[in-house]
Image (cartoon, rainbow, N blue to C red; front, side, top):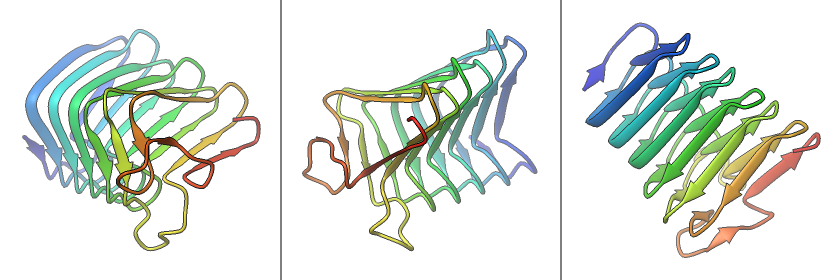
Length: 168
């Protein structure tokens, strides 16, 4: 477990190739895990990103993160933030819950994929009518299959739970 760091719990940059299993990033001042830069690749399995000051997972500037069996819980801002062309986050079998803002946000041409029963709900608790996911900017994509975005028991991504704006 990586906890109580003054910035991010884990930072991957400049083409780094990282694999993390059976661990967590907790209560860091900024992101739990941030991946940045062309060629940067991160694989996380059985992973928890919780109670971080900003995002649980932040993917930017062409980085790729694959997360399996992960819990992204109670972070101060978005659970997962993907920004920039060719920045990619693939989530499978996990949950994104109780984060301070949207559970998922993708923008600037980023790509976010949900597979195998990812559950996204209970985010933005101060404003429960707010969407659970936000997609903005030309070329930005949220691709959900066999996952749920919204209240428990819903299947798929319904317009009330996903906000699409500015070409997203």
